[in-house]
Image (cartoon, rainbow, N blue to C red):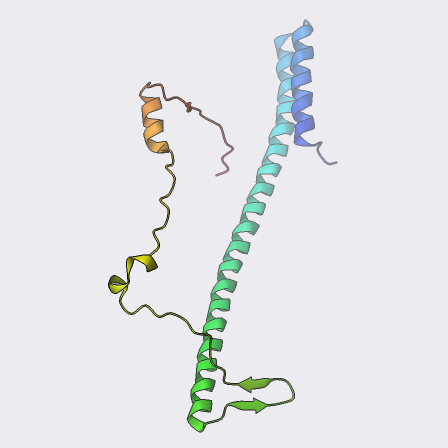
Amino acid sequence: MALPALYELAADYRQALEKLAELDLPDEVVQDTLEGLKGEIEVKAANVAAFVRNLEATAAAIRQAEESMAARRKALEARAERIRSYLLANLQACGITKIECPWFVVAIRKNPPSAEIVDEALLPERFLVAPPPPPPRPDKRAILEALKAGEEVPGARLTQGVRVEIR
């Protein structure tokens, strides 16, 4: 038999606490009831934690596969570029500018004109672009230290959340 969902077990536990508080039962009965419910919650929580670990492992495997595929893509792109340069050099050496075959046409074409910067220091001012400065951003470390020291920081407050750690 499958256990109910964790949220259902948690709701049952809260309801049992409320009902047991209303009833005048011996402490031993109350403890036994709560321990039974707590045991089910612990089993279900362990199963949920195992599922979380499985998802994290799958995500890590996908991340590794993405990195591997990206490296492979870069290697293939670099190889294609080297072979393209090899083809260009050999066609130029032979004086061939065009080859037609059933699948495609290989042709040597001129690239559009482009500006090559030989010495940036010699360029006139009108050809230089100053990038806009980045907007100021909060220094979270300094704000945290100030808040920890008891200082009031308008627009910020000290918070401390909780997390589930699965070790």
